[in-house]
Every structure is written in C-alpha cells, then in structure tokens.
Image (cartoon, rainbow, N blue to C red; front, top):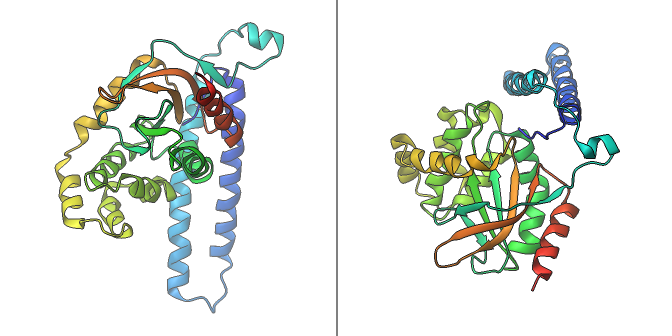
Length: 281
C-alpha cells in the first residue's frame, strides 16, 4: 500500500478510501436486505458474492490503516516546518537494478527508461494500473519514446500478492505478461486468491492454459519474484507503487535511476518527469 514519510498526510487518503468502501458495502447490504421478490436466486448469489469481496477489501484496508496508526510519529523535517511538501519528483543516486528478467514495453534501447515497482494486490497500484498507467504507456512507451519495465514487490500485508506475481511471470513465459498484468489489476482482493489464478488464463486469448497452469503449480517463478524483492530492498521503498526513471545499458540491462516518484500520482507528474529526462542531452 502507498505510504509517505509524513504519517499524518498518509492516513487521510487511506481513511477516505475506507469510508468510501464502507459506503459501498452499506449499499450492498441494503440491496441484499431489501431485494424484491422478483429477483432470481442467481441475482441474489451475485449480490452475495460482491458483498463477500467487499468484506475482504474492507478487512485489507483496515489492516493498512492499523499499520499506519502503529507507525511511530516522526519529528517534522525542515520541509514540514516551513509548510512546504517534499518534492514529488525526487532526485536519487546509487540506485541501480538488473532488468535482464523484467518485462518491457516500448524500446529497451531508449535513452530514458521508467521502472514500475508494484504489487498486484495493492489498491493504489491498482488505481495507477487502471487509470494513469495506460496513459503513460500510450504516450511514451508504446510510441517508443521510452522503455518501461516492471519489477515485482509484493508486500507482506497482501497475502495474495506473491502468487499473483508468479501468475504474471508464468504468462510472461508466453509473451503475455502485460495481458495478465491488466487482468490481475482489474479485480484485486479475494479475486487474486491462489484458487482463482489458474482461471485467469481463460481471459487471455492465445495463452496456452495447460502450460500456464503447470507453471503456477510448480512455483517456477517464486525465486525470481523474491530476487526482485531483494534487489529493491536497499532503496527504502516503504510503499507501492514506486517509480524510477533513468538510463539503462542495453547490453547488460543494468539500470541507473536519476529520479523517483512514490505513489499513484496524477498523469501530469509523470509527464513532467519523463519530459525533463527526455530533454536532457
């Protein structure tokens, strides 16, 4: 889940999201309790299923709220004292990653590379993947202005995230990572439970479902997912999604970051950061 260094700032959006989910859940309760007699058993079961998914999401968000509340309050830094927020686009040094196994969109030989560090069961990652991400990919990666890579960071508070990452990697064996990426982010929470992951292959045209299911069952990519987590561990990523923009040696696939962006920021933030990097000599 997305977090920032100022605890009081990070709790507000989480609380608002929790209230929003509670409101939707209340609406489902009303629908279930006051469903007219004309409704069929199938209608009722569909509503009940949505209610169960909502309960799971509420429980997950509550865990994230509790984790934020338990985090020790930090002494405000100079930016907080002066009333100015830290920069959204932050310069970084000594951040390198080996992207030889990372799924790519766009041109891996571009002078600008953007790395998304993400968790398939993180609600903020889902919001980025459904809203802002497609616009970034369309404007920059799919036109080959940049190369765009994905690095896995399933967080401990999201119990379904590690196996969901394996599912994406298994689809990636067949050149279908990004298709599975979109399917997984479309519905999160209990929809990502391991029992449902084999069925995700049915939503991807051209995927060899037997090979995909066998890959999942064997945990073929478990070590790869863990290696991604180990790779980014030194860089203090306290929440997802996180983004790094920089350059990559196309031969060694070693990436060196210049700036980072933490969180599901608006499209304008990514446009500014990418345009600045593209304009550099």
